[in-house]
Length: 341
Image (tube, rainbow, N blue to C red; front, side):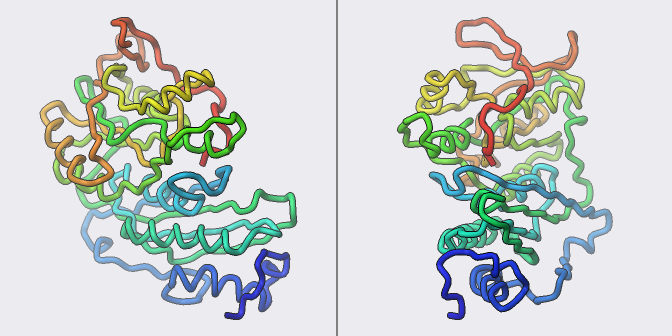
């Protein structure tokens, strides 16, 4: 092995042999791009279908800490970008990955991050085809930041969007809520909290493919990342001009997450998720959607949480509480937890 350093130095970003060694041994040896050119050259049978459309997304990840129960910044970078494509109906195919690395970062940490990215990309059926690395001085970053972009193909005839949601449509989530935010908070150790909670970090492309195939009238999907389920529902309500009512009784939240939120004065509806989405389907397709979701591991906990209604008082989200009352669930203002993804 040519790379003998244990930590990243500024030389690893200088364009010379040290940089080539770092890129070759830590990144390209794992990702295995088809060429070493400055661009990826892409082709897929899905692009040849008449009416097929390209979907393109990009996101940056600055999670703190970079390793946490259930994943690390590499895994979340792949999951987050795959999910942004999938909820729009696209089949995720290709990713790029750019790294900003702080001088002094442990190279073994980089190896773990890259290994997690490769493992999750293989699981999701995508390929990391191009990328970039930059090294900055100590204090100019926090170990490593990752930016991923993704390209996918939306098949002919599929058109998902919040504006398609109609009164009567039913909201379904695939998984428990708040696990990622709670896992990150516990991993920071600031609050001396001890909880056996892992991030829900997961790629949801296979789940969305199953739901799309089972539900011809699938309206929309939204992953409940920063701002949690509450913010995702408020975005949908505003774009569709509907009211959305959810039931506290059916919300899937672990007792450990509820307990942590009660101690810290947080609301689990606003905690970030990295493997949870909400879909809206026509009432007659609820059973088909639930069955399709539960057929894949990422959707085994699928449950109906609410319904869209006529926006008599304007678009908004409300919740029926366990005590029979109701409360408005507003869009998140500010940030409950910074550096969450």
